[in-house]
Image (tube, rainbow, N blue to C red; front, side):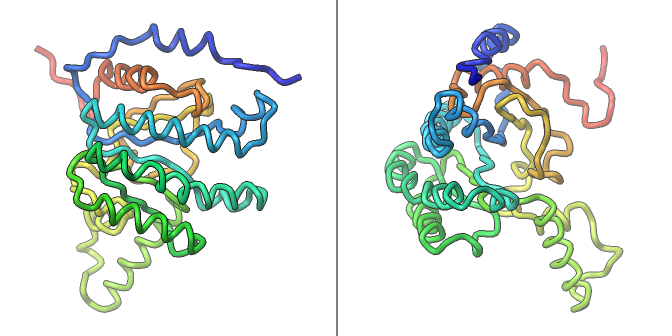
Length: 263
């Protein structure tokens, strides 16, 4: 038997745990694993693609609210390198989604001064998806506000393997010595290298739908990120829940492997 709105009470419990302080620390870079679109649709006896479509409406709401709160980078895990294993009809819909999404949302992003970036193996996307991505990035390139960064056809293990290959080629060409390879060298070859150094690593990672795993997302970059897991399915994720996640972040002590100084 299908269950409708199974986590509603848990949302209320999550919202009551933390008090959001708008004047408090706001994560500069938030990354989100947007999970639960299919389950949201199935709970309503709808096709899975209806969940993905509703999920794009959530992207719009969360993007605007994150920008309003002062977040500098919002990275959204839109399509992984493993998602090609899904049914063909669903994959085709997901490849059309950026076309429809950007066609409607780019004017609003320009009005919000939000800049679009897309990272991942874009060269393997269908031509119409590539064109939509390029157009969105071009139309918003002069915006100076929050960066809305989509991870599209992205996988972290593949990203790291590609970075290692690029570094190895530099060593082969004698442009770099092996003992000169540092953490910074690796970071400079990852797909987040287009960001300023201080913004490359998310301070907060949010995953929706109740699953508590990373799913091959930003494995290098989230070494010291704070993690927030919510039972809310992505289409049900609200600006209020975003504030709840940030409130959780505000109530944590970030020591980066050291000890907090005491007085």
